Image (tube, rainbow, N blue to C red; front, side, top):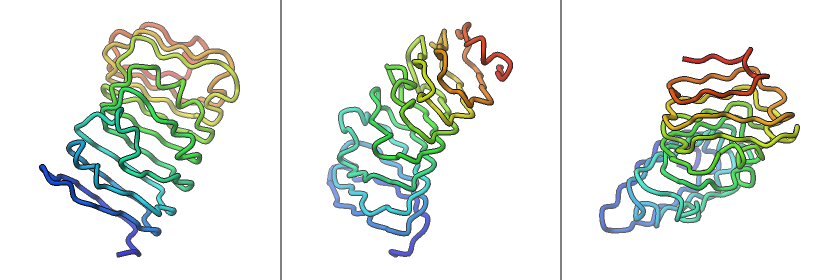
Length: 200
């Protein structure tokens, strides 16, 4: 079991909290589905030193939990992270996953512009903001070359309230592709990105 490389874990406990310890030092990918707050009370994720890909889906609000019930460790080798959980507020991912290269968000329903938190990820190359990942009307990223220094691809789709995308001068210096789909209210994108933008 400790040699396991890939794991799909679905946690549903009803009313009884079970203690579930995941300590797999060779695990490379983990797909986790939880269905309520009690399902994560007994869940402990430890010693995931080889983890490279993590996907979490949950029909609950993670904001009040602030990651701690998962005992999520710092994952130096994690390159891909997919979140499909209602959160509203975002944790400091740069502290947990300093080498993250790809991040996909869906159904997080964030109320603050996600770029202001995610810009701190030094090695992020691909960022996907999917359906209901953000509930605001403006996405704003402050300027400077240290904000998204490695980002090459930004995908935004199905954000029904989004009206304006603002990326200030100097940020995202390596962006090669901006894809925008099903954002019917969006009317403003940075002028310097128009020649690399695909919209639909």
